[in-house]
Amino acid sequence: MAGTNPYIEKAEFELPQQNYDVTFMPMQNKVEIFSEKISTKSEGLPGSILDAALAAGIDLDHSCGGVCACSTCHVIVRQGLESCNEATDDEEDMLDLAPGLEPQSRLACQCVPNGSENIIVEIPEWNRNLVSEDH
Image (cartoon, rainbow, N blue to C red; front, side, top):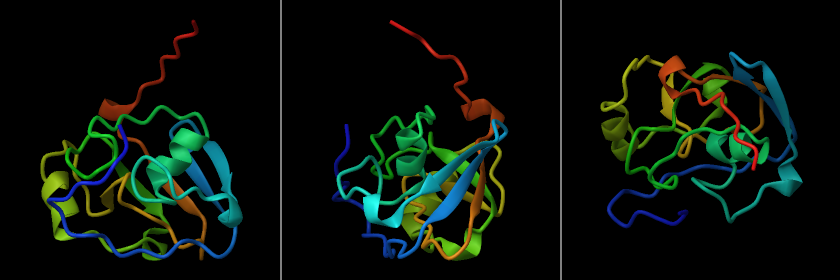
């Protein structure tokens, strides 16, 4: 259900020019992000934390399809927040609806690291879907 939300301001971000790592906690899944392989067709903004999680097989909830219309992809950036784009007012409005809000909280669909440093992201306990269904 990817797409765009015409009712929000467009987020400003820069795609990384170098490779970097994202570690998802508490699972300690370390994912290497290759700057040349970032897709522009993704859920959320290209190069977003949501994009990295889904590419690594981490099932991070994103009910709105990554268009900044809900708060289900709420994450806490524990390290590397300085390398991420600034949150828009629309993202902050959505974050206000998320439980467990912290100063480093972001929506994974809107948070795009620039690759200047490695990132550590905590998926809040209420948002962890550690169950895998094999069909």
